[in-house]
Amino acid sequence: MRNTEVSDRLGRLRAAMAKRGIHAWVATTGDAHLSEYLGERWQTRAWLSGFRGSAGRLVVTPDFAGLWVDPRYHQRADEETRDAPIAVFKEGKPGTPDLLAWLAETLTKGTVVGFDPETLSIDAFAEYQARLSPVGLDLRPVHGLIDEVWLDRPAETFSPIVVHPLEYAGEPAESKLARLRARVAEAGANAVLLTALDEVAWLLNIRGNDVPLNPVALAFCLVDMGSVRLYVRLDRVDDALRAALPEEVEVCDYGVVAEGLAGLPAGTALLLDPARTSIALGQVAGRVRLVPHASPVAHLKAVKNPTELAGAAAAHLQDGVALTRLLHWLSECDAAAETEASVARKLEEFRAGLPGYRGPSFQTIAAYGPHSSEGHYRTDPEDRQPLGTGGLLLIDCGSHFPYGTTDTTRTVAIGAPTAEQRRVYTLVLKSVIALSSARFPKGTVGRQLNALARAQLWRAGLDCPHGIGHGVGSYLHVHEGPQRIHPRNEEPFGPGMVNSCEPAVYFEGRFGVRLENVIVTSPDEVTAFGEFYRFQTLTLCPFDPTVIDTGMLTGDEKEWLNEYHARVERALSQHLTNREREWLRRLTAPL
View (tube, rainbow, N blue to C red):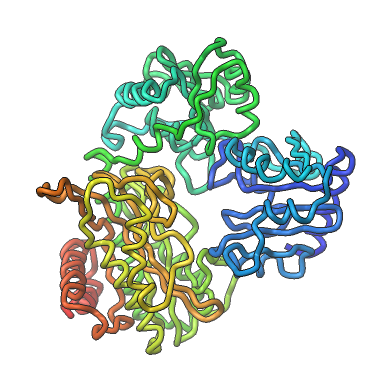
């Protein structure tokens, strides 16, 4: 985006702020469902600043604009705001104040800080109040200000809502509702509001196409002990869907969810997830007794049933075929004639004929050379800069199938890798192996697994600037929780949980290595010390042996890699051409 566009948009925002008596505006990243993935209507922070990463917060005052981004986006934020009148605050770097500390220290007493109440959670609002009110700052929810500024703001997009059949869901909606109600009662409530799009989709076995790259419909769901109200666009519900929904489901218009909350009987004990519910909705539920509690659906959804696990395995087989065919093509193509964008397009060609392929689960990242050092690089489809012949190419990609969702990353050498690149690649691979081959007792939580995965990197004085793993949905969001392999995650891992395993190391402006498999927690054995679990790897795609320093691997690590490559070769060969099959056989030969 040109500097003049950003300046003009910020100028219009400041004029609207002045008219309403707002001295500072905080633009968060989110929509009315506090989603990670946003339709164009809710790309407010991106529209104002030019920075289109999936996370970030923008503060605008009459004479200043600052953008706070986490380590995944340090380089990208610099690039996308270059020449714009915006200061980039790189969270995690020494000396960078967090956003609330900056507000508290910079703004004077009596300053009015405005925000869109539809895009700020109840939890976040409480934190803002706790840290800003004591220093005299006035937090003010402001409806409609962005509409005054963003004159051609896109409307919501609503697509037909479809049934997610039992052959893929593995459990009828009636059963899921019964399990949800039991969890709600355990929490001391008799009703629950679901705001997360993937939770509504999972609960009622429905899917949509309202959010790019995500098979979900814009919807809220209000469940009590005797009824269910599904808030969606009525003109997107056909007779087939109505017939498939449980009889107790009342289909209501998407726009009246606030009225539905306000009309709940006095004394209703309403469970709300304060991290997933906007302050706008929290404020209208005033007549009820609020029960703040993490959404029970998040945990129910995270534990995949046997049908979903079989679908996840099938999805990773199909996508493994496409990605392996891409890696073979890369080994033979003229890299000087290809670009990052052409690599991403070629992958889509290989995916096109896969059974049930519904599209990518996120925008494919093909990052070559210095671009591979950006944790969440955005491949520019218009960039015609050819690949070189002496660097690393990082490919992060995923697919949707009606039976599962995938997420895979491979880093490969274009030309001969350097000794440093081989060392770093091997350390990241050792981290993958350490986590993938782990055995751990029941009750082990995400932060403990995080330390296990990072130990190989820490020993070498390196670290990964982002989480090591996230949950993966079943034909839903590619990122889900509540379990994550992250330093602050306290969720126990249990059988049926599907997660990414994606350690990485980045050297800013030089190169980066990320390797990612998807793993599922499975029962191992019961000993005198209790139940133990282990991980099974779902991803089927070879690693690049030209970047592996085999002298750095232990005997156990070589055995794991040889067994993994043998399984990859067995599973994929029957789906490849003779030429691709022979290449894969050589690539996966035992070390």
